[in-house]
Length: 266
Image 1 (cartoon, rainbow, N blue to C red):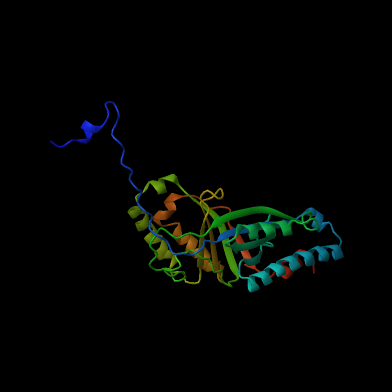
Image 2: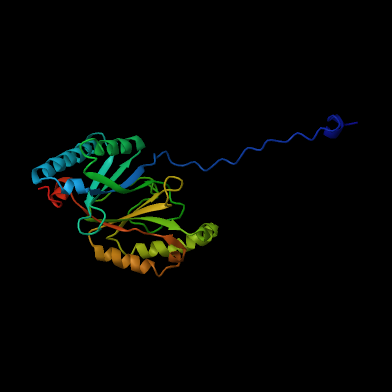
């Protein structure tokens, strides 16, 4: 006569639970994500109160710092740095520095050098957005700037004159939609974007890293194209699920030594 597990189990002891291995997550390509910061600075009142020759000294130190990091970008290729002017375009901001690196320690090192004893009295970081690159969960069929292999894991900044940067937050209702429903809505969103080939989109993710969910940065040589793109996107279904997409910063790409001349440090 066969013996069952119930017969061999001591009285009162519950059945032994069978361990179930969690389903393995789909393997992702071995591509390191990048950390990204968009840092917005302004010159302090102490800077503007300096005599002309003293402003030049501060400007030279700032430009030399950026130049050293640009040289690092060329030689080590472990960090990317881009500088932009907001002179006359945003009341509370003077310039923006875009930093990209796989190592967040390098982003901290740059910030520490910029806020050294000689510069911290004259340059103030008014706002900074932190984000990271990540595979898009949506199928992007028509994106001319990113191949399937890249899947937005890497940002490769262009050399276009303008960049428009802003934080982006979706409503909670968006995340309660099914993935299929969200993909359908994004298909319309992406199709509109592909009509504006002069505008390059850089999307980075901030979930758990910063207050926003995304930071988006649009590069173009033609601001009118970007204006028309944003206006047309307002008419899509995806716009219904936008909770916040401000403040918006219009930035003009310039070398740092030219930026400082805009503020009286010729």
